[in-house]
Every structure is written in structure tokens, then in C-alpha cells.
Image (cartoon, rainbow, N blue to C red; front, top):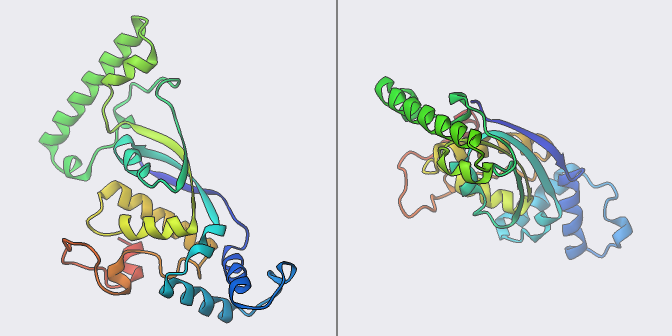
Length: 231
């Protein structure tokens, strides 16, 4: 199953709003004057200064809501570690899961190995058949789900503010991140950059913008943003 990520909603004019919020901190303007026109290059300079100085609290005024389909529960469990976010996830307690091998995410390392893929599909088939039988026996879905694979696909809606998104991209776009959440972060960043190109111009792993911050470096830093987004 292919992962699908869409941007359901976002704060209007995110670049302008962050710059406007910063203006009230550093300039003598009233609230009613905040969103009055300002040259784009000045906003770009101001946001760059905020990012470089670490004064990113103004980023919190902007939020993005994503619809995510075809993500494994392996990765959704990683997502909820990002506490400054809101999640609404498909419930296996109320929704009956499909008896379909395609409903389980297959890691590339297994998909590229025919024998490993055979073992994987056999295990998936066994677990899904057991789930079906338990449901037919009258076992509640909330109990039958205990037999399902950890890699079963899920659907969710997730909202993060721009400050947390920067943190998320910094961690999850590192080459050392788990492959699936790395791909999720890549798709999310592409969507964010379409709506807020200034705000997310420098979003991503530390290796692109300076020195790697990982204790154990991967040894193959990204050359630039283009390589990352096309990875």
C-alpha cells in the first residue's frame, strides 16, 4: 500500500503571519497594523533572523493539518512521541480490518528479498485468518485486533504548529530515521514548502544547514535540499 499524505488545512498566509507576530515584538506597531503590507524580502530576512537566533516562538501561531493514509502502526507509534501535536487515528476497536495482504505495510528490505517476502506474506495471511475466525466466533473487534500485525496500515489526521514541524523535520529527515517516517516527513515538507516557502526554507536535518547534530552520524550527509526532497 502506498502512503498518501494531503494537506487538509493550514493557517492562511503563514509566512506573513509569522513575520507579523515578530514585528509586534521588535517594532512599535499596533495589533491592527500587524498584517499591513510589508515587502517580501523584509519578511524573509526577519524569519531567517528568528530561525538563526532560536527565537521561534512566533512560529507557533501557524499550524498545518495533514491527512495520512497507508502508514503502518509501527510509524504511527513513533508519531505520537511528538507531544506538541494533535492526532485522530482510525480505531481498530470500532473499524473491522481488511483481510487483505495489501493492508499490511511491507518494508523495502523484505520486499526486495523473495524468500523473506514469502515468509512475511504467510505470517500476514495466518494472522488475518485468525482475526477473521475470532470475529466470526463473536469476539469483539477490540480483542480480535490483538492478533493483527504491527505493520497493519492505519489512517490519521495530524496537526502540528510550525515550530514543532521544524523539530519534526530536523529529526525525521535525518538519514538515520526509520525509512517510513522519513518518507512521511519528506512528503509533509514538500506540502509545507508549497504553502510557506519562507517559513520552511531552512527546515530539515542539521547536515544541510551546518554540522550534523547526531551523536552517531550516518557519514553521508545530504548535499542540499534538492537531494533530500528527491530522495
